[in-house]
Picture 1 (cartoon, rainbow, N blue to C red):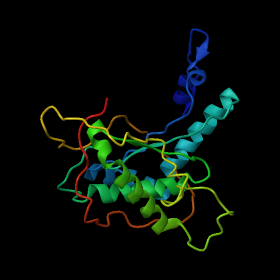
Picture 2: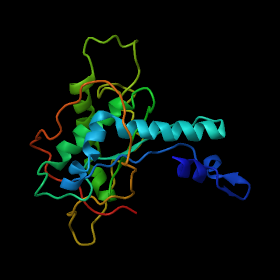
Picture 3: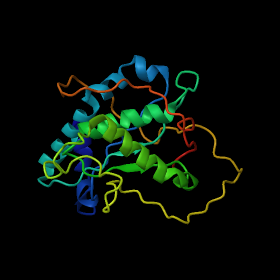
Picture 4: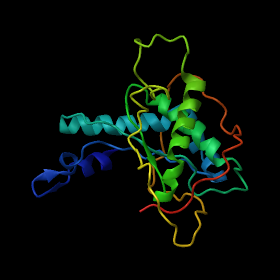
Amino acid sequence: LENQVFASSVEYEGKTLYDSIDFLSPALYHGGTEDWTTTGAEQRVADGVRVQRCKDVCDAIFGVHGEVKPVIPIIAYGLVNLDSSYISNPVAVARQRNAIEIDYFRGYAKHWAFWFAYPFDLYDYYYQRDALIRQYEEIYVDPDMDDDSSDDGPTPIDDPVGPSFVEDPLNELVVDQPDGSGGGVIPEPGGTDDDLGDDDSGGTRPDIGQTDERSTDTGGGYGY
């Protein structure tokens, strides 16, 4: 935390790094290896510890600079560094983990960004976005909830305003892959600090790992 607060205050040509950004974007990628589970990272996601750590860092930065900026976490629809022999349904697993952390961020982060490895992968954006919103609503949204009681969480799919995800790819985007393929697994574009402490966040979280008949591809490639 101290290093991130210090970095936000680094100055260049009279402006701090914090002055130069419009929002904070915690990276909430999920690992796809056995180590990611055995080291406790998956459990910290389920318990809300990782989200609380992100909130603590953001709040500390806001406190130092005296200005609150939007928080827009970035997520991926697949798993990074996937070991398919360990997890055979990576997209379904990532979707459940993402839904869990979206709920822990409820009321704190109003928008989310999807990371895609290649422009070609944006063809899958609308399906992945809507599938994630459905997953969230199936787990957390009470159908009898008064619409005026809360405006937190993702916007329902049929809302005319549209879902609260900032990435909106072009409808007519056409990109050819140099080798004609889109294979591979999603590598981790940036590390996250999963070495976290305890948290007492409440709520019941689903078991991670339910299957989805359409969730067999990670969308692969490398980000830049």
